[in-house]
Image (cartoon, rainbow, N blue to C red):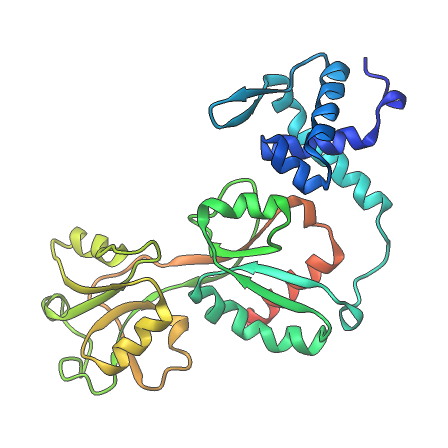
Length: 299
């Protein structure tokens, strides 16, 4: 039985960071300590728990089974202590000076942040908003370390372990410039496949997507001649050429130069969501940010 009275709380904070970083040097940087100091902390922790806790491995230090058991209970205990010692009271947006960090692709910027920005500026004029690139493989780690407050992403591809709130369900529509000579009305399947298509490939370079999956199920294929990484660039391409594309419908709200039609086959849409870490779930400021964004998008 470990005697809590004999444990330095700073050691537990060090352990929490080590279990996150798996690296003494990076842990020292986050803790604003020297590397030898963190090594000394680790040695004391090993004595306290009677376990090596972290062992050298090919890709940094690997946690032992005992360390894995400690990871989540330790994190929750430290979070609870932070909340208990933190200032009480409601969040006052008019007096706030927070810097919000939100990870979003250009679609999330346009469909979620743009509608929310006027309300954020009006109600919390002293705050700042930083929009960061969204990389699916990094979201969970960024949220855990506090590098981002929120991520805007599809629910289907959301990393596990994060809190999530669905904002809306998006659907795809066929988009082309107004006056397109081959799209005076919704096309048949054969006409749709004969058009020259463009596609958004966030990862870069792909020439197929969910539309091609739907076409394959119908025994058809289309000709994709352009692949780009960003939705907003593709809008400009469509307005100035005879290329067409299947785009999320919310991107067409402020594009009078473009027309949208129904595709000849049903295309699977997606659910757009906000993602955040458990550590900020009960924070009044963070709750206000989430509610403000959700309310703006709903309108």
